[in-house]
Length: 139
Image (cartoon, rainbow, N blue to C red; front, top):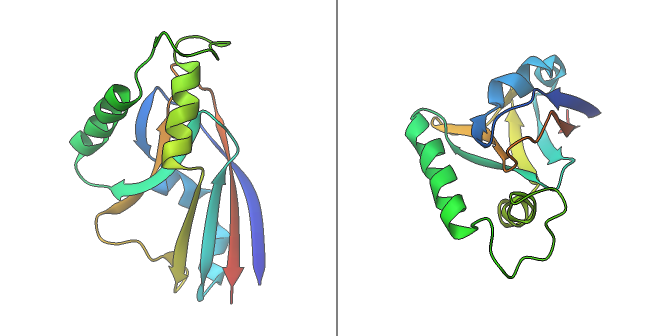
């Protein structure tokens, strides 16, 4: 059995945001899958996805601080600055973190670890709503 659905995530501020619950609210069909794989793909080049700590919000703050230091804005060697100083750094951060996740499905639920959650990594100061393609394969 296959399922594919495009879901919209609300606009968020720059930073790392837990979106597991928001995805699951828009994906009630997942309960039809006893076993399978869920592929998550973000249709943007200035935001990314990752799995990490879902309990302590300081982890998300530390992620933002780390990536802002690792990929700073306003570097003199940047050429692509079409949409502002956060434009190219957002593309770089997106490439580093990635645009896809693959998560096992068991008993109609995501097989995430106890402390794992899905993050939307918003790298733009004004990124807008984000589109996510969810594809589930299983039985």
